Length: 222
Image 1 (cartoon, rainbow, N blue to C red):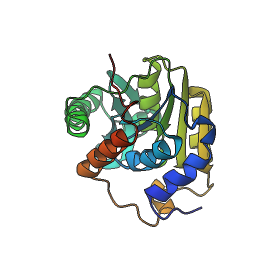
Image 2: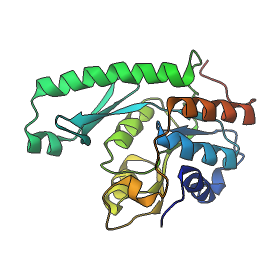
Image 3: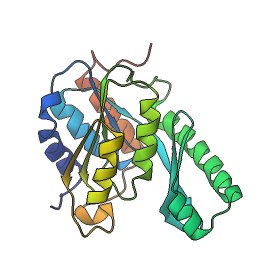
Image 4: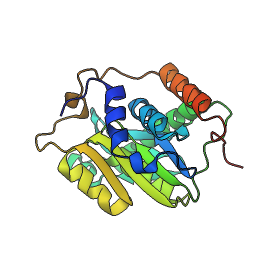
């Protein structure tokens, strides 16, 4: 299965989440940046409020595209010990990269949301969306951070992931929805015809459009 772009993937994903449509206790969270474009279509189809949940990958020194872990809002840090040990990455290097990414995490939260508080998730059904899962470290950090906020149910929803990527979240989340699980998996982008980078401005625009669609439900934390 190949998607034309993230919007098409989001619409397809929403069809598998139809049971959550028009429920007042459902919120949709997108991982930046590409996940927000997918999540926007999901939130629109389900008539649910949308927010961004910021997570930052910790890239391996010299091979930044390879995740050795991730951090998320709330002080959550996930480390892939297999990658760290296999690459011989010292603790000092991990700390230095984590500090840099923390600065970027805070910048993004401000850039995407401004002064608005995040959506309340305690006691809610949370649908956590990304444009795909590769190593899973980013999604792991997001799930761990959200668990601390006490959602009633946590659903991980992605258009594509390797079978192992989906399987690991069946233990961590209450439900996993994954449209495609190809055995031959190299990168998320190979399953999109258009996988161009989503910009900060596009994320802000999608969040603002979503707020206009569900103005009575787009309230932040008390």
